[in-house]
Structures are given as C-alpha cells and as structure tokens.
Length: 534
View 1 (tube, rainbow, N blue to C red):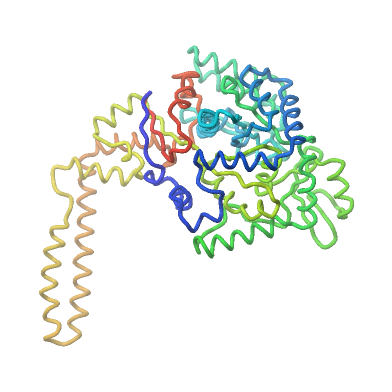
View 2 (spheres, one colour):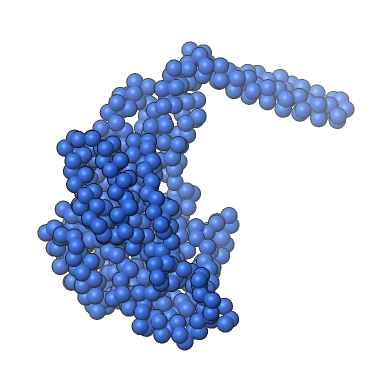
C-alpha cells in the first residue's frame, strides 16, 4: 500500500470548530488545555502524576486483570498492565460504542492512533511509559446505533431485544446473521482467520461486552492495547464523591451552561452545543434497564418508578451500590479522568466538540483536563480505482470535492470548447460602464433602468454558462458516469468512506498487515488525512 497525506483543513470534511482548533485560534484556547504536542503531553503527564492516587491505580489494574478472566492476555497486554501499576505510567485513551464487527472503519483508526501515539511518546520520553486504552461504552443503551454494519455495500443488521446497557445483551441471537456474513466472506486465508475471530468472540455464548473485548483483543493484542469496561463496581466506588455532588448540586449542568454561553460570547456567536446539558447527567441501572434520573423539588424519579426517592435514600445507594449509577455523555469524561492516569483523549470531531463544553466543569472538580487529539482519518483506494484516478489525471485532493463539483471541474478540463463565459461578461461590463456615464446627463430614472438591465444580462450569461456545462456533460456522458461511480466508491452516499464501510473488506485483502501498515503510516499529531492506495 502507498500513503499520501492531505491537511485535515484542506479536505472540506471537518467542521469550522475543528479547523479553528487545529489552527490554534486564540478565541478557542480558553476551552481546552493546549494543542497536542510532545512537550504539552509531557507536561500533562507531570501534572497528572502529582494528583492521581495510587489507590485508584491499584483498583484500576485489579479491575482490568479481572475483566480479562475470559480473554487470554498476550505478553504485550500483560506487560502493559504491569507497567500500569507504576506511577510513571500514563494512559492515552480512546472510546467507542460496542459496534457489531467494530462498525465503521474509523473505529480501527481511533485505536491505531492511540497505540501509535503511545509508541511515539515512549521514544521521546524513555523514562516514562504510556499505555493505550480502549474504553468500551458498555453502559450505552442506544442499541440501534451499534446493531448494524456495512460490508461491500450490504447492510447486516442484528435484531435483538434492547433497552438496557448494550454490553449486557447476550450474543446468542447473532448466530443467523453471522452465518450469512461468513458466507459472504468466502474461503480465502484471511477470511478463515476472520471467521475464527468471530467464533471466539461473538459465538462464545457471552454478552456483547465480552464479545467486543475478545474481538478487539484479537486484532490488537500484539500491540498491548488494554480494553477497559468501566461499568465496574470497584471503579465506580472511586467516583462516589462526584456522584454525590451531581445528585445534590448539579454542578455539571451549571458549569456546562456557563461554558456554552462563554463559547457563544467569546468564540462564535453562532456556536451550537454538540450536547445540551440537563438537570441530571446520570442514569440508573436496574433490572436490565438504563433509565434517566430526574430531580425535582420532591426528590428523584425515573421511568417505571411510581414513587419518589428521597435525597437521603438515593445517597445511601451511592454509598452501597455505586454500580447502579451510570454517567451520561457529559459526565462520562470526568469519570474517565478520575479513574485513569490519562493525559490525552483521542476522538473524532463530534466527540471533541462536546469536550470543549467541559473545561470549566473539570476545573471546578480540580481534575486535570486532558489534551484533545483529533484521531487519524483515512481513505482507502483500491488498485483498480487508483489506476482510474491516474487515467483521469485527478489529484488526490480533487477526490474530496463534492461529487457535482468534481464532475464540473473535470468536464471543464476535458471539454474541447471553452466553458468559461467570463470574456462575454467583461465585454458587457465595458458596455454598461459606457451607459452609466450617460446617467449624469439625463434623468435619474435612467440609472435604475441601466442597473436592472445589467443584472438581467449578467444573470442571462450565468444561465447560459450553466446550460453549456450541462450540454457538455451530456456529450461527455461516459466520462461523467465513470467519474460519478469512482466518487461514490470513495465517498459512499457522499460520506467519508470510514464512516460507512466496515474494516472486514480491507482485512480480506491484507489481513493483519493492514493494521501494521496503518501503524507505520499514521501520525496522530500531524493534523493530516491519509489516502491509502492498494
């Protein structure tokens, strides 16, 4: 495979906020801990070391070791877990939902980015150690979002009862779907390897958390990735002071609202929050369900509960059963940073956008706010399509144009007539300048007539230019269709490939070499989009 790189900002697929962040816009600086750099990450590690309790570190290691009871630890994983016991070891974290078969390709990219940065930091600062963490969103209850994946244009969807934490869903009902999928894989050596991974994970008879751990571990165990399920009673016990404050004072709601106002006043008046705060940022886990907690003047309530629960009673639950409480999307980042010796979070643009709402909340809790790193992103181009691109004389950055813009640009390039009518516009401009000179010598009403006619004529030229372009598209129909098909294959449905396609297709062609190549190619601090050929 060959790799090419394009700055994120030049692709047109990243929000203004992400571009402003990467460009270190001054107005956005108060809402994060600084741009990610080796020096800033090193300083963050020194800061975290001072405040991260050894007691939590011990619990963390014990919990991870216990969670691997049904998953064999590779030597690399065992070594990283042992390193994590030391106060000179820090984590780089990424998180994601428990998507079936890992879901879209970018799931893989997030984890590779995380591992690669740990390796780079170790080379840069050999006296410290850095361990990659994949945080499983096992408490999430949005089953619809994780229940399907796309393979070679076909959607494979899991139909199962849901409503509670997705991590607790048994995978037995997946069997018919997996059988269909395995038939699609064929019998190539890499297909057989993938079938073995599926068998050991999703067909092992456990729940989705166990299956996801096993599957992801099979892909990344040689790189020492530690997989954490934070829905853990021992870990949540360390979060009880923050649970109590959330129930009693709702600090998160107050601070996030304040941060949103500050973003609108000091960064962008049109800023719209990625996630809106609410009264409480907690769910209650009970009897296989995850229900949102609501506080009112009488106490606490949730769906399915007829009576109110008093503050005193619910605080007793926090003390005796902290595992009953599940933080939502705005409180989860604090939980993460409380239980991990973490210095950076790697995520997509949407994720980082809601982290920008949280800086003042972290400050109020006296927890260091991690550095935020936009994950690596990639576009994979097959050898066949790479040849098409070469024949069409397209540049890599041309592919990131919207389909119509790309087609228009190419039609103008290959057309044997000039589709640019700007020459006629210059002639018209000169003629109307001559007419305008007569305005001062006649009635003022003539000026309005001249302006109206000028607008009409220029609009007519624009219309003719569009008609001429359209006519050439018809004449060059074959080239337009080939270009349209090429763009659809690279950007299915007009979306980034990594947000639609599953990694399985690439794995069938390259096996584990695909991940190894990403590990060599990606640079998490580069701010560049990677285009892969082959």
